[in-house]
Length: 81
Image 1 (tube, rainbow, N blue to C red):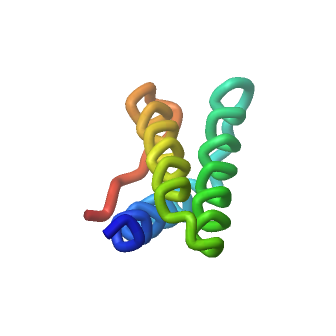
Image 2 (image 1 turned 120 degrees about the vertical axis):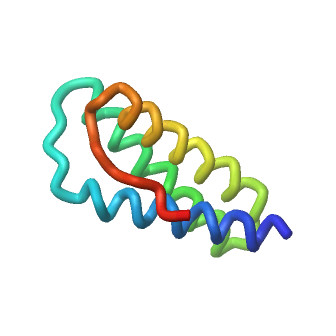
């Protein structure tokens, strides 16, 4: 169950990050986007190790950071559901 769920979230975040690949941010917004990317990479790492719950925690955190950037108007993307 956790494996399927984390895979779904990873796919969603990956698609959002693809939409943001050319994003030019400065300061704290750039730092937050970098953190979102790092949590995405961490999630993939943990899934590869079979640690799906830890991967899920990482990817959900990444999604939250991306949502915060979108809500604050620093980036534009849409979640593909």
